[in-house]
Image (cartoon, rainbow, N blue to C red; front, side):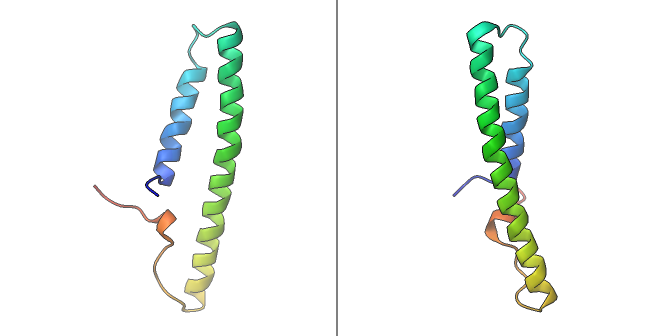
Length: 78
C-alpha cells in the first residue's frame, strides 16, 4: 500500500478547499457536503487505526520488544 498519513492530510485539505468553493451551489454543493461527510468518516477510522498501531508499538517498546514502528507510521524522507 502506498498511502501514508501525510496523504490523508493532503486529501483533507483538498476536501476543505472544495467545500470553500463559493461557486458551488444547489445540488453540486450538497454532493460535495455528502462527499465530505464520507471522507470524514473514513479519515476518522484511519486515524483511530494509526493511533492503535502507535499505542501497540509504544507498549511493545516499554516491554523491550522491538524498536521498529509499524510500517503504516513510518515517515520516509524524500
